Image (cartoon, rainbow, N blue to C red; front, side, top):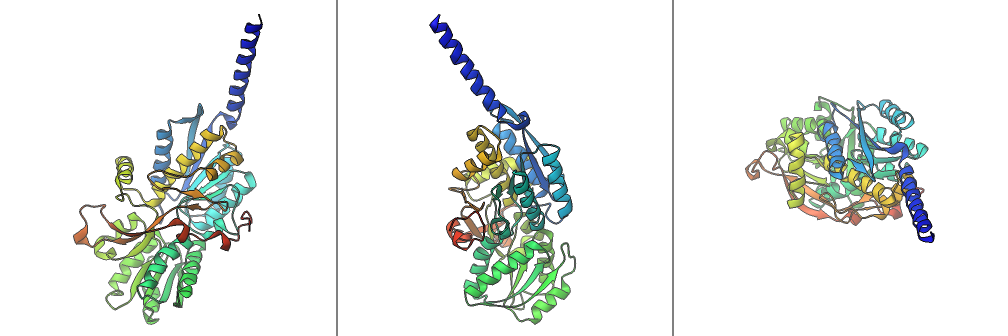
Length: 403
């Protein structure tokens, strides 16, 4: 009789544990929101490719976590902050989305960061770059995963100055990302004894850079720094070639470049451009294997944003599995406590300010004669250690950082 009673107690206890674990999954589902630029200047390196990368991660994870299904919702924020914020709020309040991952611009990302802090929901930033996300705008629930303006300035800016490019003129996208990138690069240039001779601000989606390029040429700066991204960078580089900028002795410094940009410009125009990247599909066997799988789905090799979105999603799902809950506080703790080791990053670590620190790479666009195929576009010049490329915590203005 005692043995039967003991078995019954054990069975009830086990059942209670299972029910408790089940109850830890809010609404019996893990829901991920993916907000991207579907058709605008960022659509090639983010856009639909980020949605497909997140879908790949969910499928590779098995479609469920701890017995609960994983669902994905997605939206095009149309490069508008108000749409990004409204959609994020709708997803959280109406659809009970647990985590939002973005490949948007910095202004939209900052708005989402504030929303995540207010609603206690995890926000992963895969395409935005402003260091504000890990400084004054940091959140206990925010993760800046791929790159930021400090890393781009440290990687590319330092390399260009080291090669003699000690006077600069900036062509800067007139919004939060461009301002942050120009500021961080300016600080790097001045710290190395260089100087900035001027800057021209241009609107997002500019089609004619002639007046800006003429001002840059008139400055006699050794380097024209492009503090922009996506199609803005592509058009500026093409028009700089038409103006004979590089043949006249000035050098272009493309501070944020993606694989899709080099492909779009073509190596005849892009050859020799140096830039900092967190990922290149042809770097090793592991990156090639994953990238080929992505290519089979997307029909293009992945940008660092698309590859990083997969990695970040897998890290998030593994944290839920380990924590046994999708509660944001428990999950973000697991994400910060767990090292990232996959095809994207080795020994990656999410710091207390939300910055994911990992090694990046100084790359250069190949000459046409060096390329062996349509996506064979980069030479990796060197590895930039994560602890030297990202802003040190001693300089952080994030309230979460203990000093």
